[in-house]
Image (cartoon, rainbow, N blue to C red; front, side, top):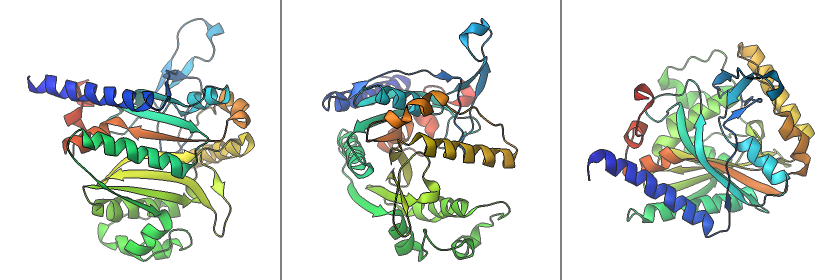
Length: 317
């Protein structure tokens, strides 16, 4: 078998494993649109845009290529689909590099009746079973966001101000202009914490600052926390999940906050997904997660370059 065919066969084998994993759990595979009249308002994620040239009765001409299938999947859940997953391509503008390709494969799934901790356990199951196919094992560490920062860096990620978060990063020559508190937390994670995660450990970080809630529920407390988790294999981030918010008014307020940030940054303002907001109050209690398929393949192949697991990287597409 030549090198290219081996690469293609490894991807096909992983896709078959994923489908078998969810088939055994009675989670239904679905397909949702790649193009949408709504966009992802997250100011840290940039979308590709295209124009529809057909009859105006078909709807808005401006269409956005999905950065995730999250919004249509939630519409299916609200309509009574039950547990579902999608394995497909997503697109993010401006993201190209060693671990990023503007077009990549995402596995996203939702489990009705799960909270974020239960779904994190299922992500760990999937990753461990995938590793077993390669004859590998991994220990598991589940740690709260606050405890991770406190034990490794001596800072309180929920309460310390920016001035207390900056000193550990003093040697990196970071331009502080315009950086928010959450930006500094992200830099601490990517520059100091992630690189220390051992290769054969699955690290599950749970209960994020409420300011990083995205589409997750916020649990009351002193201070409150977002019911969100991220999963890492070694230093590579694999998955991001939430105990899903099902309050349309609150979600609209978050979309509007994203839009204000975009406006302040001079970014393009994107249309909110009104179809999602119209049904979000009917979303059942559930948890959802998105996992980067190429990231998982990189870990399985011990590769540090996403190009190694793609048939055609962006510069060759």
